[in-house]
View 1 (cartoon, rainbow, N blue to C red):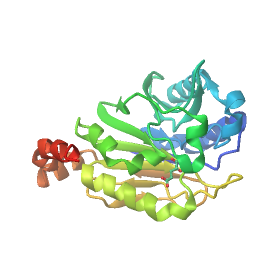
View 2 (view 1 turned 45 degrees about the horizontal axis):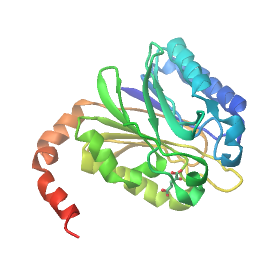
View 3 (view 1 turned 180 degrees about the vertical axis):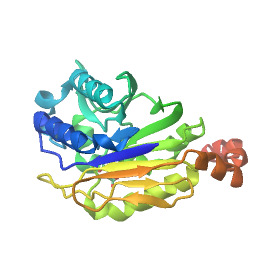
View 4 (view 1 turned 90 degrees about the vertical axis):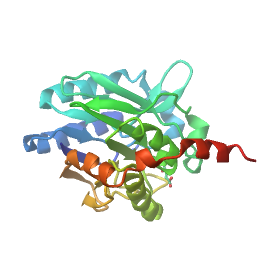
Length: 265
Ligand SMILES: O=C(O)CCC(=O)C(=O)O
């Protein structure tokens, strides 16, 4: 599976410009026989939270048709980061996934809202799981702060997810957390982690870049720097079962004991 993480600098509050940036980047890399394209978190608007009522995507309609057309045009799967999705009752931070034929095969709204960046004041938390299937491989998608909740990711790998896609707007001051948490999620779940962060700045933050592809042993296979780029790498899905049979953590779990411990106090 050949993957490109589009580590974009996002134009603040400007969906039209951000769509142009994605189109331009795909034109540049489309000759590389890619299987999956990954975009960052909130790639249409950035963290322009006070203006989401006007710039969020109504029911995700524009985003879904935009990625569906690109997926068909380039015959590629698209894990479309996330966008602000507006309904009559709420705004969520929502990931859409399109397969090569343009079908929307995944929708997941960020479960854990990040108070430090005021998400809880403007957004609602989602209630979907992050599962989707790409070219026959069961995958999971989570959004930024979600990676601090290993139990949420475990709930997906325990069901057989082989690749964890992480989309983010992760700030530079916590770059060491980003790298360490992603490596830990790969090691403890014995899965590939494909993590696409944004680059650049907005009025409140400098972002870390450093998109990463990490194998099920925890080795970093590819890593971007801080500036905008497309990080391209290949993953070998056979490695997931190799590592899982070498150290069979999924067989060795003791769920009854964990549940008991959680109820003691
Ligand atoms: O957990 C962190 O340090 C960063 C999280 C974040 O930036 C986000 O969820 O948008």
